[in-house]
Image (cartoon, rainbow, N blue to C red; front, side):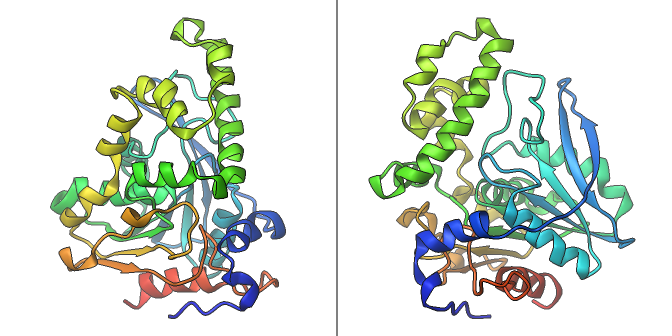
Amino acid sequence: MLYQPPFIFKSGHFNTIFRTLFTFPKLEYNRKRINTPDNDFIDLDFIYTGSNKLIIIVHGLEGSSFSKYVLSNTLTFKSNHYDVCAVNLRGCGGEPNMLYSSYHSGKTEDLDIIINNIENNYEEIFLIGYSLGGNLVTKYGGEKAGSINSKIKKIIAVSTPVDLMDSAYELSKYKNYFYNQLFLKSLKNKLRLKLEKFPECGISIRDISKISSLKQFDDIYTSVAHGFDDAIDYWIKNSSKQFIPYIKIPILMLNALDDPFLGKKCYPESEKNKYFTLETPKFGGHVGFNIAFDSKKNKWLEKRILFFIEKE
């Protein structure tokens, strides 16, 4: 399925922001909270159709089950009679999580907890991750390799920063100032809440106010809270690129060449693993792949994913 957008969607930036700013999908979920072994919780939002097939969707950085791309895709999967579990990573479900730590790009142990909690109800499971979530599901597939739960049939990763350092440096460029500031605003607000709950954490309001890049945020918070030496150590150990050769089930990765979040190192070689398919459309932006202003017709991404799940 070739992605051939009209002229206006040949702008990577417009394609990136269109779904978020100009689409309004609506959906009512059934929420389930699962408790984690470290005395925390993860909120999962379900759509039930009576199917024995489940699609697990993992959102991107500072997203949630209510991110527009999650809602839009969930509606399509629902109409095609799949059950859907839209994950809210720790602290992303509308309520702060209990611990100083939260979620990060490679926290695959949480994905394992989720799957183990719900897999008994299904015969087939498909993992879909967008952006950070794409890195997470890809890393999970490689870590599990041949021991992955046999119910997990395929993995789909969309707009995936498989090299976290490369992506972080790409986002720090002037052309991406708008996105960088949006992410930092949300991340810093959450960190201020952490500081109120954990005043002994070793950082101050002044430290937070001085954060001006994702690297600084990952140096000050992400790496420290999750047991890494610094941002670079965190990025190196959690980049999914190194895990791709070990994946033993079919995986489709869809990374547009005009994705403003991805640098050159985020397009891994597909010939190193027969299970791995990398598609790199010339256009698409970041989690965009729009083809029409009418939301009913704007379904290229959803159809591409369904075709991979059902036909390929």
